[in-house]
Image (cartoon, rainbow, N blue to C red; front, side, top):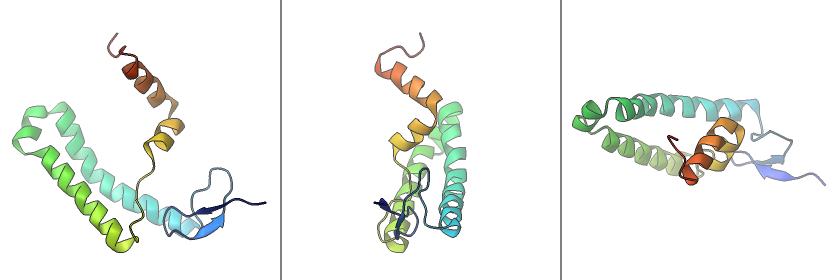
Length: 113
């Protein structure tokens, strides 16, 4: 029996194939375009927060990032029926093995050793 799953973008049920999260190419493109647009803005603020801390703090970059993400969530509720527009942290880390190594060392207290 085929496994049905919900499309990450539109929520429609479709027959899930391995490594397939969307019911159509349009849904995949819409999902990725929204993430790219939102991510580009967050990327600049986060990099400043991480590597230009004094400037970022003076400009309240973390507050701006939190406000942006709250606005993104409000947009999701209004336009996407409340479906989240992000992938689970587990999915992101599992598809990037180098992140798994970093998180494992952090849990074991070995960061920087």
